Length: 114
Length: 511
Image (cartoon, rainbow over all chains, first blue to last red; front, side, top):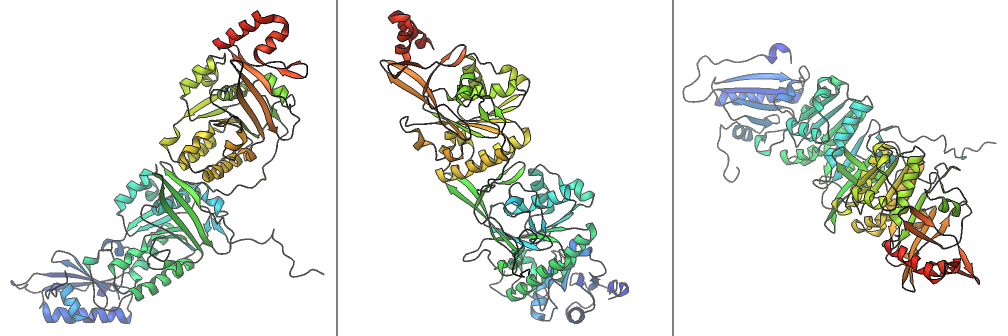
């Protein structure tokens, strides 16, 4: 992914009063099939559930390896929800939409699971 | 015809090694950890894995010109810095000079949600970046199995770890991977299946309220290694391992001789005293004069201008000085000129390992020519006999290699059979003096004999000696009708008659 796309962001024209603003960072390593799948899955989730109240920043660690430290990145791809607080880390290509929604607090956690 | 089967052991080289710089460990491993390969260090909580790893890194950075990366999965960089500091070492300046890199990888299960396929490239990139940015030659991963608590896909993790260790090999870094001891295996998640070059096991157990630490090299591919458990010890200057295995009997021997400090005793030992670099055992019951002989020996070293180191396990330095002064031996000038140093400690204040490692350190640091251990028998009270014997052998070899002459005193409880009560250490001793108090006709007579003295002609006589305010004196042997006369009999025989004998008796009483 080029540096240009890495800074690609979607600023909402007007955040909805009903929901909080989502600041999301997707960490990947190069344009692998998994990276692209993760980005596609993320965009789909955002389109369906956040309605413009979000910003996605894609960070390619092959280009900026020093950034792995700050957000405690281990596995790739990792989605970090910087806002709203608290920080959430979602590991994997986001193909499990249910778990991704739970991880982003867009769906309540199933009972029995903390 | 030269046979291909002809072995050339001298030219067969074992795998290249990276020295750890840890006292004793390089000895057991024959030079350090396998260079460019990962080593697994496992053990239970608090066994010393992290400290050993840290010392490996800081020695690499400071002494061997090999920068290192410490990747912790358990402690923050602040905690790591404090831990390094507890070894008397501030990592920050080295980090500033890019000799060391500390990083904390946080694995919090409740912060992580798994949503699909992933791999551990993030960790690879992070570690690779740290390695490349300082040109690291050494890496520590402490404790990587923490990953299993945060990520649930065990099979994927195992495959990724296998890939990680392979990748470390291609990076050519010498790595330590630590693992927590698990049930039924070396580590909880079977890391020993992936790291097969070198595996070291640490153990921390309690024996009679004394905690002892043990280290064992379980395997070392392509190299011979000591297979025994070795005690090790952690103090403010780090780890020292004390290999129980002997250094091998290859030390140089010296034909040089040293005075015992008592001319008459020198005469009994072929006229010249002990061999330089030999070990001497002085055994005897309570109050037989062991410390006096030790004091003379230390004093004689000072007279030659050589430094002596005195380990006192029974009396304080002041007490020893006072008592020796009573027989006319003033060690004060030796102390002032630093020709004598006394280290006094109660054996129970430290574990056995603690003592022996402290002794090693002090000897290494002061480099004395002469060492006194008074008494060695007090060390038995802190260890089992087998341990004492093994560690003593180690200490003796250590000094022999350095051509130091060592005198050990030993308290015998059974005076009739001194051979039986000396921890079985007599075989390490080159010269053995036995002191006795013989009680007869209402008087106690001090006697001394040379039980053995390797490599020199020595007297076979049991000699009477006295401790006077002018010093220790061996008395001439007086014979009468084939008997050796001692005590009042001797005085009477010398022609003084009963009066002189009584006088001698009174003199003896004053002593």
